[in-house]
Length: 101
Image 1 (spheres, rainbow, N blue to C red):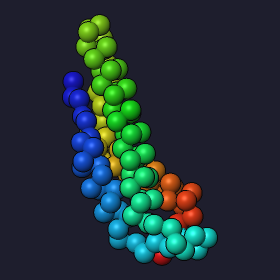
Image 2: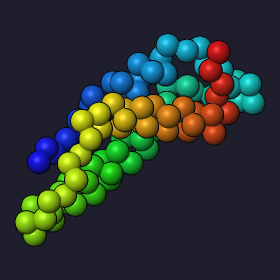
Image 3: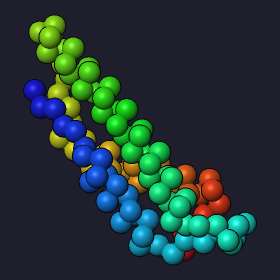
């Protein structure tokens, strides 16, 4: 049985890289601080990622203790988690009025 955990700092670096490539502007609030909003959105995405990982680890631990053959975690879970995190950050920024160009 394989247990996969995404390292939060790796998630943060990937999320930053995903958003840094685009030019972002906030037409509704031109004075808005992109870096502050990005940091807040990244923190939210990391928090969700940690909660998801905690749940998955707990489920796997329960299976091991009960001697139940649980389904293994998918090999591409890290990629899926990073993609989900990037999507969360982009939706959060869009919710704050930011548009990527």
